[in-house]
Image (tube, rainbow, N blue to C red):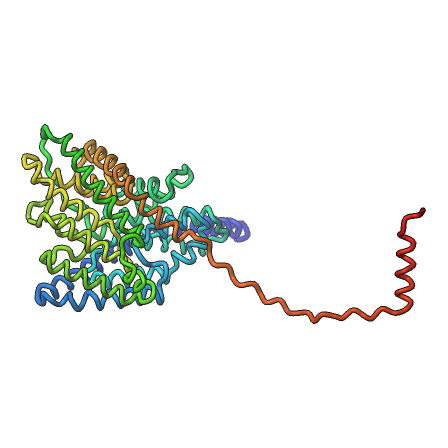
Length: 471
């Protein structure tokens, strides 16, 4: 009886071990992505709250704090966390479109994960115009990528699926937008969709989303806007004009980031190359000055300003979107870790507020929603992802056709100014990895040829006679 029980128990153990390797490790990673996304969001919110408290009590403090934080953040990034700069989405794209094992070890390591969270938290403490959504994508991808060590026979396909699932789950948990996570993975990260990866992708998004909902509750990122049953007569005109305005603005922003050598003066370019910490401090000073001019509205990601406009509790200047763009460019140029999703949505909300001067008869939340999706689509040139994200964030299913049209037109207008931003930045990370220097070859001393003897000369003459043609 005991002998029959032993093979059965060993078979159960082997099966359980196989199931753990196939599903358990992956589920554990998705749970970790959801937990980290929520905790990271709370950390960023707390950090910005501390900055706002400081700024309200000491209005001029950002002139000192923001440049100092910028210098420290750039020094830390360049010294310890190379690969953590920027939003993080270009790094994920570069890993997916190249050799995941090699590039992931460089761009998605635990060191990069820690640096992304720590330095972006430091930057938000300084009031920088950065978002947490792009960093959450890289953090989620890094968490899942490092699970490859738990698979007995990991390969490039498994590594690619882990990175893709982690990135999509990170975006979904950050915005509470599960549909946008799927569309983002298809349209932005891979530009394709494999049936083999669909189950993995959706499972990761579901698990991470359940964790986020369990900790934060069921919510919409920007609340719910109320749209009447009857659309205004000028809606089609508003869609076209909003798309053109935000498309131009988003295209100019992309051009500024991708063509710094064509508009930054030569002395500043030299300063950036030779003394990047000083250049970062200068950018921090510009951000602080712009923040003081705007009354503090350009500091941070802009989430509070955008939500205030949608709720009708915030009244911003018509110059807000332009000042916010200056602050956003200044935050991105030094190479500090931080995303552009939330600031782009805030800038779009500012343009919607500006366009309300033209379409005064239309509801302000409707114009803001259209401008948000237009500017985000222009910056990313991913129209499907943009309108799905905004639709889920404002519960705006009634506006889905208008949002789709605005996103499509704005992304096409932006293409006249610059190529897709994330893809262009990803190409810089996809440069060939530096190859190790070849091992030094030991020098072999030259051996001098022995002097010819009389016998050698005779034999040589004989060989020459034998090879001569016969007459």
